[in-house]
Image (cartoon, rainbow, N blue to C red; front, side, top):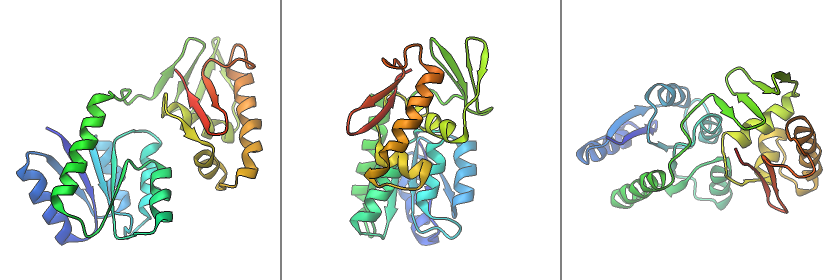
Length: 227
């Protein structure tokens, strides 16, 4: 059974979604706020998250960012915010789709099926706290990196960068996204921050930092982690 987590503080909309989803044999959990959503996501391991951005305790963008710290579960945003800036911000944070309220239920269900299909077509890396490569291992829970049997000392900024990349293996993470996540800025003029810190990470982790095997640059676009 496909499990859906609905994150929405409008009781009437929640009821409509639950009825429609259960009628189509989906398992449904509902959360009225961001904190409850994050607890349920960890406990219930949903296959898809449907998320409103205007939550009473935190912005939905923060929920997306928190989820992306440890899972690649598809996130469908359901929001009354129609500005392109809002959509870009949600997608940059890691949302997979953006559906504007009010929406047609059949369209929503079609988008949900598409998200599930994408997940099935490209199996996700099992949710794990340990990332192992041929040269080093990363314990995401302990925030610890070991290379050659020795702990590698990383600064908080280096760790934050590495964590974002390794929790999205094979996925291109844009310079803009990394700058926003790590430094809270998106100006292209700040890309020198990224170059400096990526160079430091490569010196600490790569066998040949000049020809990296794991921390790959996509020129002009961003970076990828290849496990």
